[in-house]
Length: 416
Image 1 (tube, rainbow, N blue to C red):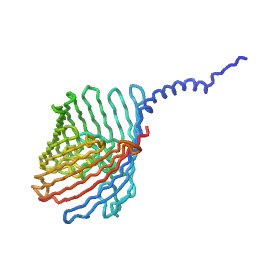
Image 2 (image 1 turned 45 degrees about the vertical axis):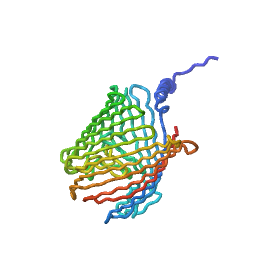
Image 3 (image 1 turned 30 degrees about the vertical axis):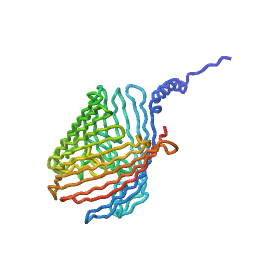
Image 4 (image 1 turned 180 degrees about the vertical axis):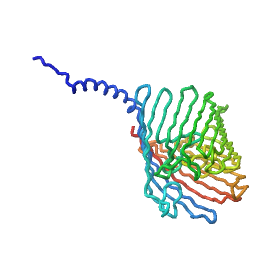
């Protein structure tokens, strides 16, 4: 028996929609197949004793648990690929009080001074990919000389804006964009981007790194925090293998920072020359660093970020006006002694000739020791345990003296 099929509007819709769905499914393959999902667990205890006379509180001690989930998609197929990333952060108070607050682990009520029980952030980032370029819009965590996010506490800081990363030219990585908001490491809210107590409408930046050869790379970046400061950066990184299994690495950095427009943060005038030379052989690495500030102000950098300087250490960064600072550092990897995963670091930084409103010859120093172990096998493989010990002292008009210990446990779960 023959059947007659009528071409109804519904069947026409199916006829034309089916190929479209197949095309969309194929286009979405990369979006799903190249996706990643992780959960980072960070347990952080920080104990800080203030040794200077007249300190507002004698001690700051807090303990918290952090959770950071990252979902990163791939890109859809086609000349312009589309992707979406998401990041959720949650910090929980395990122990704190109003008289032990202020470690940077937990936010606190500005009126009662009581640390909050929890705080969180959700960030979304849209991505567009074409050729060898990627445009990201939304929540960002840049790691560039003129803007570097902070990841030294329970949760990490984030910025809001857009950034274009391009590698269209062989050897050259270009980054340029605009940031308008920031979320501090111990905050659930987004604030206007700024420096110190001054805020701005936007921070614009552009620059890149060019690899001249596998051993030598040069960088240039320009950043402008509207009506606060303008900043230029020049950098050079060189690695040189030497006879006898030695390796020499040189990292030189120079910043020129000036005021911009009405200078909402006051006069900004700073030249920052810093660098580090490291000599490695087997499990040993010896490093020496210097840092020279010149000009009438301290080195400026964005709220919510870290300064890109070699003397950025556990507690301090030694970037006050006119400060001269040097550093000696030693690293050792215990894998050479049959204990893979165990590492040790110690360093000493000395700063002199600091100029502030209260002194023309301030001085400060910091000594750090860092012992870390990453479990290599078994059910807890990947679990990291880190102990950091800090001693900081100052004088000649500078009045901060601190003894500090940090215990950090970290573990990352990869879902796919």
